[in-house]
Length: 268
Image 1: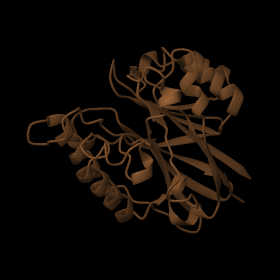
Image 2 (image 1 turned 90 degrees about the vertical axis):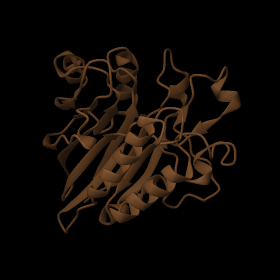
Image 3 (image 1 turned 135 degrees about the vertical axis):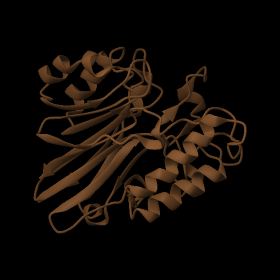
Image 4 (image 1 turned 60 degrees about the horizontal axis):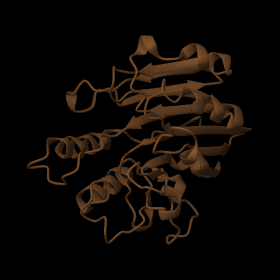
């Protein structure tokens, strides 16, 4: 049975709902995880999602900032909304969904961006980001014969050399500094997570999911970063059939600076 999960930092779900509608009509993932919804729960456009067949909705939002939401065409059960770093930010939720013979625990994350200065001593936003990633060590890829785990979201770190347009030029730029990338990869490995987007992909192949608004011509300059990720427990990696990065969505009208990533699984 084919099962698909999409992740997308939408940068205001109400502002970009027409783009979400287009995406769902064209790609129809089973589950969509959104980040940076910037919307309190009582103003989330649930009616629009339900009209598109996404009857099952779990949200954790706040006015003007942050926010995550998971919507699905099949039943989902809220497991947790964790408050990382006791900041009161809405940056995580987890749900349980049935796919084939597996109960999948699905984490949806929006990791702090970290500001512009990569020095935790003078930049509290960067300190917050490092502390947040450290707390993510507690999120493990739990699984057994009948269950598995998936973690998706805007994790705001491009960990590998070819996850950015220029490794050398971005070593002192937030999202690709060594302190971020090393702690990020250590956290992923400690949780026994598989980086599905890099599974069976040549090391030197560039992968981007984000292009800055600051670029005059994002497409021709192509100075991207892989900030959005899809991880799974070891037992689901063998069922992973591939992913799609919807690069063209970056050129849609009034786009997010992130594009959707769709992961597909074949689960019996």
